[in-house]
Image (cartoon, rainbow, N blue to C red; front, side, top):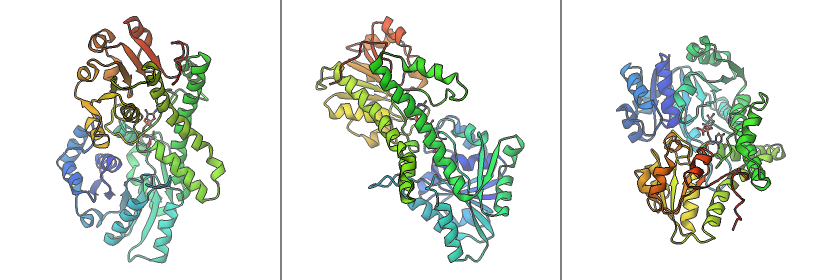
Length: 445
Ligand code: UGA
């Protein structure tokens, strides 16, 4: 089927490539011509494991095209996927819908055949209906429908999540749009991927509810970590024991520095803001607490470091391993690791950051921190090592080798990713989050 994709960011580029891989003829438009040029040349403007090869293979099929002409992308397509960002507004918690509105306007200016506009972006409930209402008041020359088909892919596993999702959700207000969407994803449906057909508002809600639930699960275990710290209990063991209960499940129950990135933090805030607009703020007031618990974990790491340095960061060298908001990504939006690094820098420490992929993005966000290309340079002569993002290569670090590089063998494992007894046995003073039993509680300053 001939499809257009508006937005060639993380979501749009991966989604379009997967659609072409499934056999469709896909044309992608983005307002940023440099992004289009890179993708057309087979160079992803972001890091995603396996994506560069997948993109090259799919471009070679001749079914995937990146264009800086909105008209070329939109004309003749039966479905138009809106895959643009919905960041948090500068001065409020609400979602900024500027890019969704502009993609919609661009489609409407170029549409030339009966087709459906399909939203994939995460939006406040009611957005799709608002767009549908515009079509009622300004009837276009050709038949245009609105549908919402939320995306659940995670950075780091984006291709697998798109081609083998847990479920597909089709929010439509017409049989023809539903039929077209079923055809687009026909291969996945025939593979047995579960799907839910519903109305526009419910489809929008599925996405924000899913991200709110995941954020709640992470903050729940991090709240338990706070209690473990004062009760001399161990959150890692607690999480393992809870996870064996099928009703609870072990995923998204890793205690540590909490959630970051361009989705979970802003989505729970936007959801709260939208609930307020709808007069139902109380229903999700707990999300404010989820946000606070999450941000407190960052403060906890900084206060642990303060306690280690007897309250004085000046003259202290700190290595922060990890800048991305999670491993296998170069995304530093609302990164917990980077926010801890910046906070220690502000307090007077000399902070050296290492990340296998995210140094450049981090440098743009926090130019005053020092970025290192190797773990060795980051750790040389430091008084403290903080593990902020649990990249696989950090998990296999040799504590004896790193111990020879540093000035003081002091480690904060903020992701509970390392074997602390192994590090302790190698002469390290190990601190972690939620592990009250591993270390006499360090007095916070
Ligand atoms: C999240 C959702 O998982 C996707 O389903 C959704 O499509 C996406 O947002 C989106 O809205 O576009 P993503 O932001 O890529 O995906 O990252 P996750 O893998 O969900 O991790 C989010 C954060 O939670 C990371 O900072 C991670 O380190 C943290 N996390 C995750 C924990 O602290 N503990 C856990 O147990 C799991």
